[in-house]
Length: 237
Image (cartoon, rainbow, N blue to C red; front, side, top):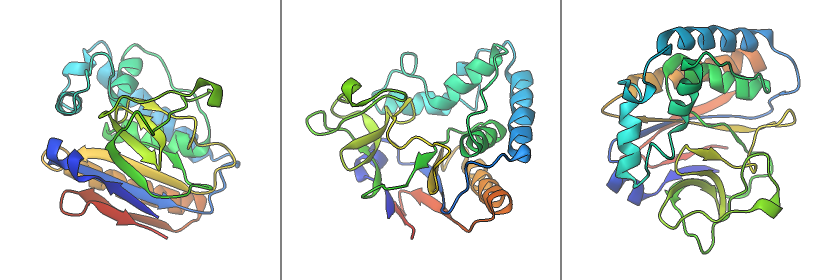
């Protein structure tokens, strides 16, 4: 299986730099206290760091807002996932503990102030692509909804997709119910979105940190890498 960023994305965002972590044979039903402790720790640190501030003006957030604009996405109407996350925490709100993989994803995202996705690979047929949507063929089911609530993305909006199944709309704005992580998830794909000229080192650190935590806590082997303009494809077994 492969993760592919299509050339048109790099025409809009030439510095796009995405860390990739993949793991299989996960036991996501067991309770892992260390993950819960990590999430609580970095949630508290983030709440203190962003308390009372205008999140959209923070230097960690501005590059994503600018990238959204480059992609034709209004960041005020459709904020990046990491902006929405820290805006929530800046108001003193907390994050729910959902399941170990999602909680670990959120803990690493909070630690490095990076947008991260968590995609279920179980029974996934085809490659995962970051590309422009086609409203004639692509379909999206919002998180928590069913096929009765199917949506069509706008043609030209940036999506993560498997075939014509849209996993996220408007880059990292909204997640699909297809590909969501459940307690039964066994195989997982994490994309960590960044920019080579802004936060490359943080992305690299997050990839290594996440990989180490997966190997240590879940006792599994991990495959990881980077996708950028010079290496637009990452393949795993």
